[in-house]
Length: 339
Ligand code: AHG
Ligand code: MN
Ligand code: MN
Image (cartoon, rainbow, N blue to C red):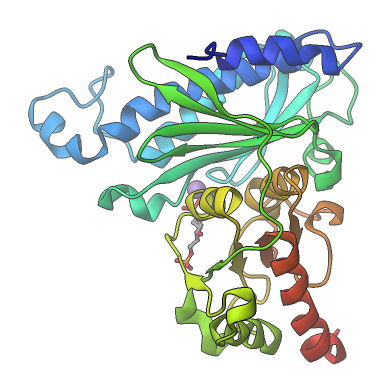
């Protein structure tokens, strides 16, 4: 048996990657690991909501059972507010960003943007869901309140990004720009343990993940690429398999390990698709690129987009490099006239 490396040990070991680091980022990542364990506890009990309620154990304040996505949002926000490394946060659950006004927080060097529970429509049906986070160094001065420009940064400026998947087991996967590492929660000791060191996404895959219900209302390039995925060609293993869970984190995680492409395309009703640049697209783009894959809107790299607003949406094609490049070929060929 090889030695177990816990998330905390790993984070401390890796601090040497940042020669002038003060340890703030390490503490922040450790805090995220702890918050993830707290959320995991509740996610595991999701189906028991009514039963626990009936026993009068709704929550410690005696309030009515909260929706899990709101609960997760509060757990992460409290963890960041109490940690002192973060001067402000923006979350998919809140309309505006929150600038922490405690003196300790105003000295924080980082902002965090996150999707507290991704795939939340899957909570009630016992299907994997996740948390996605993105960390930037603030652009405002240390000591001031955080402002909007701290949050509206390009993906390529990220200091770290990661996700937690609450699945058949719970995993935390993150990058600080030095590769991607995955940790599995070992419930008996309550620790995330390094289980997937130096993750790389296969350059080619045989899985495509898209909501095919949208085929008639998406763009010609996407339609043509999905048709290509279904064509028979034994040389490259087509037809590919369709796999779509409806939880981005879960679909992304499977494709990261096995190879594949996830697409949330533009549709007639939503010309920028559904996913949010800052809470979903950018952090996963950082991870996939660190793992050797690609993330694009179809025409531009996700990492290079200058966000204009917090809840900005962008189309997303993400995954195995050659699959994403192939999809981009169809888009360039069939849609370039429109641009
Ligand atoms: P969220 O639960 O955070 O709002 O995100 C849901 C997202 C994403 O996780 C998933 O891949 C996608 O919505 C599914 O959308 P469709 O049902 O339109 O396919
Ligand atoms: Mn989401
Ligand atoms: Mn969400």
